[in-house]
Image (tube, rainbow, N blue to C red; front, side, top):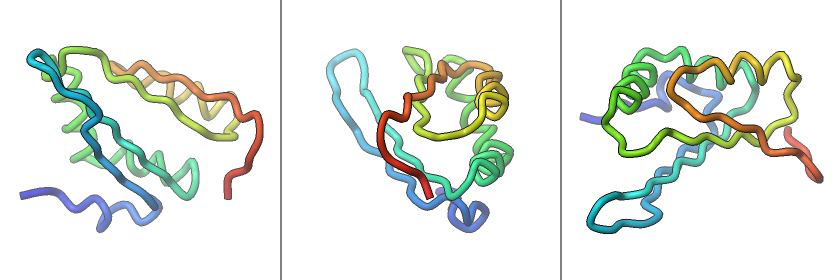
Length: 101
């Protein structure tokens, strides 16, 4: 049974999971998630099923590290808190043009 994140994470506006490529040794997936606010992302990260899922991935289920690129206009303090998530290579894309609502 799949966990319905939408029921527990109202600020998660978009959750898309796609298969990017596959060969005999690996499958590459991409997730795209959009959150209403920084606080909504924090709710997502604090969600027990999400924490359990990430822990399984970090514990060696994957053949490569988890790479996360965050597109945001958050403060450096907010970014630093996210950089401390163990097992995830997290970078922030520079906002050159655009806006977030």
